[in-house]
Amino acid sequence: LVCSVACEHFHLHPDDRLRLHVDDGMDFLERACAAGGSSYDIVMVDVAANQKLPEDGQAMLVVPPPPYVSNSALRLMKDVLRPHGVLALNAIATASSPLDLLQDRLSRHFTCVCAVSPGPSHSVFLACDMDGAPSSEQLWQTLSGHPVLSLLCSQTLERKPSVVWTIAQ
Image (cartoon, rainbow, N blue to C red; front, top):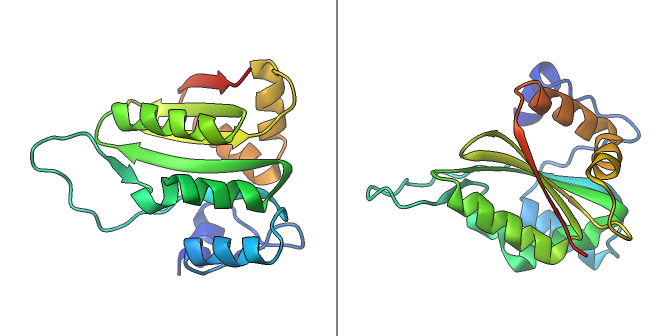
């Protein structure tokens, strides 16, 4: 069902360069790493869970669920990426502070992290490893050069979001 909705409404069209896998994400990543890893140009994380929101107004990450942004999960995601591969992660929180913490965590695993924020509690993170310290324009050009990411980038930028870069020196 999810794949058919994505194909019909989000212009997702599998072909020889784009393969869809319907599976538990963490199980899939573990199997991919066990099989040798480094085989994907992009890993997209857009996962939600039936989480109960805190009644006390406490700030929390709503999307993705915590297991998908743990250090071990991020290591698995990085391990299955080819050199210069990109992690694209959709994140929604009840406030901005969990998004800031998530950007810090991503920066510990990837040399370049871009947070495209269409709203105060929503960010699309794009993370990759690049040699040296590229300019924001170079990083954006690399990230938006991926066919799937270019669609994501253009749709997100239409909303005139704020963009925050973290580049490890």
